[in-house]
Amino acid sequence: MKIIAQLAVIGLVSASLVGCANMNTQQRNTAAGVAVGGVAGHLIGGNTGATLGGAALGGVIGSQVR
Image (cartoon, helix red, strand yellow):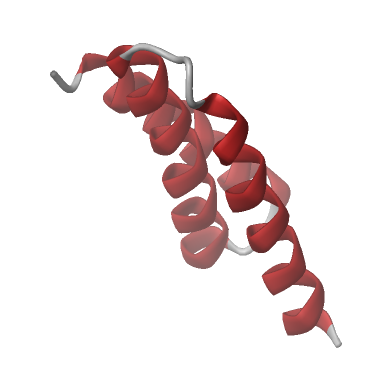
């Protein structure tokens, strides 16, 4: 049941990014970095702190990608 909930959250986050069509490149990269970093942090650490840390780091890295 836990994996189904995680997949549902990932699906909802992915679907919400569709509303970002009018963002500039830096904003899209930041949003993508947050999403990828959050997922990676959760997979690596498995707790809320790791998820938030991964999302923060992913957002910073994503905002700097050109």
